[in-house]
Amino acid sequence: MTEFNVLGDESEWDSCWSQRYTDWLLAAGMSGQAVQQRLENRRNWRASAAETVVAAMTANGNPAGFLALSVREEHGETVARVDDIWVEPELRGQGLGTAARAWGEEWARAKGAVKISTTVDGRSHLFDDYPLRAMQMVKRLGDAPELPEGVTARPMTEEEFPAWRDGEVEGYARDISSSGLMSLERALERSRQEFPELLPEGMATPGHTFWVVEAGQEQVATIWLRHDMMPGMSYVFGVTSSPAHRGKGYGRAAMLAGERASVEAGDTVLGLNVFGSNAVAQNLYTKLGYVATERNRSRTL
Image (cartoon, rainbow, N blue to C red; front, side, top):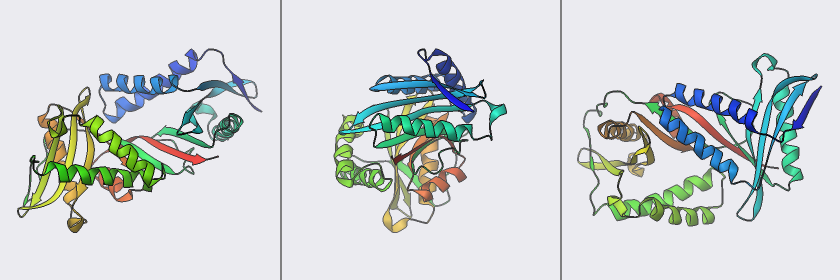
C-alpha cells in the first residue's frame, strides 16, 4: 500500500534533492560554482510559487521516497509543477513513481491548475508521455576544434547586426510557439521584450559575441554566445543556418565556431537550450557530444 504524508518541514527532502541534482550536473561536466548557481535558481523559482508541498511516500509502511510540488499564476492561469519525484532505488519498478505522479496531478487539479509541468534530468522516463517543450544540454570543452575545410568564422559587423537581430526575434518566437509553450502572438510579445533586456547595449553588450560563418565568401550561418554566463560556462543564445544552406553541415560548423570562441574566452563548458519541436537540432547536438541535463515537459490537466 502506497501512502503520501504531507510534511511541514521540507529540509530533509531539500537535502536529498540538492545532493542528487548536484551529483548529476557535476557528472555532466558543469563546474561546482555553476552547479551552485543552478541550485540557487531552482530554489528561487520554487520560493516564488504561490503554494508548495512536499509529501513523504511510504510503501507498506516503509519510507519509499519524496514528492515535491508547487503552483503559481502565469498569464492569468493557474499552473502546477512537479519539482521532484524520488523513489528509493531498491523499490523501483513497483509502480511507486507512477503512483506519485498521479497523486501530484490530483493535488494540482484540486488547486485549480489547468496545466502541469516538470523538469527531469536526462535519465528519467517517468514523464515521457508529457510533450517535450525544451531541453538543456551541456558539453565539456577541450582544445578549440578546427572548422571544416573551406569554412571560416568572423565577428559580426555593426552593419549586419540590425537585420540579424530582427530575424532572431521572429525566429525565437516561432520556436517557442512551435514547441507548444504559448501562442505565436504571445511568443512574439515575449521575444520583443526579452531581446532588449538581454542586449541593452546591442552588440556591444559585455560578455556577448556574435559570429558569422562563411563558406566560399558567402554567409551560411550565425551563432550568438554569452561567455561566463555561469562560472566557467558559455551559453548559446542562438544558432541559425541560412535557409538556402540548411542541410549542408553549416549548423555544425557554427557550433564548432562557438566552441572555439568559448575556449578562447576561457570557459570550459558550453551550454544551450533546444526546443522540443526541433528534432534536427537535438540530433546534431547529441552527435557533437552534448549531454541532456534537464528536459522540460508539460501538458494540460
